[in-house]
Length: 172
Image 1 (tube, rainbow, N blue to C red):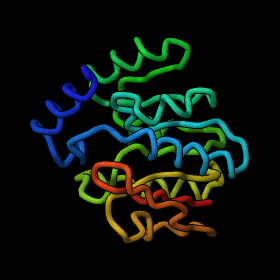
Image 2: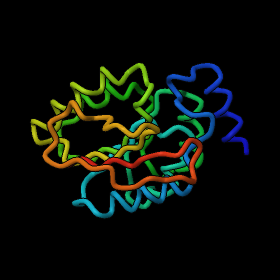
Image 3: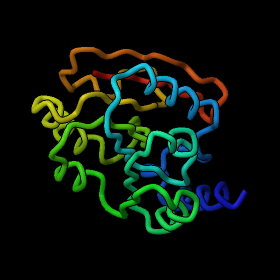
Image 4: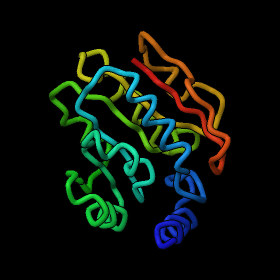
């Protein structure tokens, strides 16, 4: 319950950055985990881990957690002490990547003010062969990374049991 209250507080302060009034549901997290398991194994970076709603279901895959909010970051460190958690801007962290990886984007890009900044960095990482795949969710029906030239892209799952309902997109 504490996580939900903290999340709501952050949403009320900056709704476009948070994107939803509630953390992702376990149903969405399980859909993301299932989508990841269908892809080639890779080092995983989770961007925007927030309260850890998705992290909880993918923690066995040992993702590197990147979270810009210091309160969320501290919460993640308490809940997942075995995972490396970085309190940093996602874009700055992605610029530092020098090995192949898979990306779990836990930021719904539909209304996020940083979407236009993510697109070029994701395109660059993918075209250089560093980004092997990306799994993300969105609250809209349109392809959130349509501008990136992925070879394969598909809306794999629709999760009605989430507030709001969400689509899981997989890119490779």
